[in-house]
Amino acid sequence: MILRIDRLQTELPPPSDPDPDGAAAVQELLGGKFGEMSTFMNYTYQSFNFRNRQGARPFYDLVASIAAEEFGHIELVSATINTMLTGTADRALLSGRARRAGGAPLGDLKSVRNTQHYLAPGGAGAVVQDSMGKPWNGDNVFSSGDLIEDLTHNFFLETGARSGKLRVYEMVDHPAARALTGYLLVRGGVHQVAYARALENLTGADLTKLFPSPRIPTEKIPECRPHLDRGEHLKLYRFSQDDFKEISAVFNGRHPETGEQLVVAEETHPVGALAHDLPPQPAVFAPGPEPEEIAEIAARLRTAAGLPRKPTGNVA
Ligand code: MN
Ligand code: MN
Image 1 (cartoon, rainbow, N blue to C red):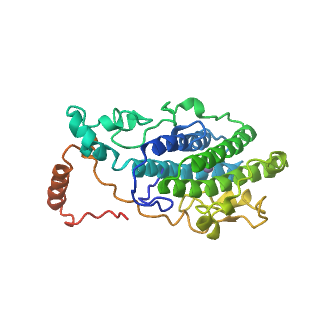
Image 2: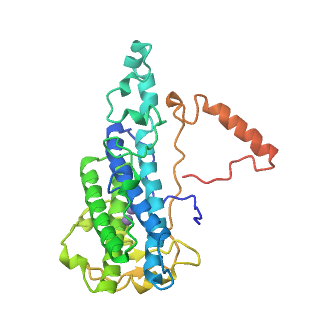
């Protein structure tokens, strides 16, 4: 089972200038073939289908634990897309052209790259699609039952995922997209190394020597630096209080690019950061055409349930 912690894995900036076309590009990192839905679902199904777990325990622990981290990556990409879309619908509604148009208050959004961010199903939120609007689908999952095949596939998947992140970094300069890609480039590097080490420990073949791929100079990317300084490029987490302790049997040795010692973190997950409470977008009915009404009902229910007047959740 999965236990959920209401934190993002890393800090994102608050909404600034909206960037709907940038958000459409970032969708590739969510629902693209090499996006976070794919890494998450690949490792999740491989762990579900894993046979002889006790016999192969360190490898099961590795795949199962990284799967949980990928769930948090989906959350982070979605938060980024929501941040970048904040303000677009209401700005369109209030703009002079929309007023003149009279009957088309969202008319300014007609030519954005992905109108589904505003029409069905999206209320200025993330959609489970790639950057061209194609829905993510289960054919992107490779779970062969053969451990060596699966680990080789995972190394390739992380490699493609990192190339994609770098390209999105180079295409989109919105601060939220840059913070996202800076973090994910570093974490994807750890997963690449993890699967390479797992394969090397299992077969003797070192994929990092076979494929010079992709040599991404993260130390030259400003948004990667804070994560490198904290050693996030060397650290694998166990996403469980008591389980997945055997990842240390495969995630060990030296980082192939920097020569530093790889470590299994003592803490079970990244410190994390509070999410920003993104404002309502009433123009697209999120969370409704009259958000105040929902807030009033929630306040009444809170009082009736004997909860504190102030909401108990935490936001940035
Ligand atoms: Mn990921
Ligand atoms: Mn990954």
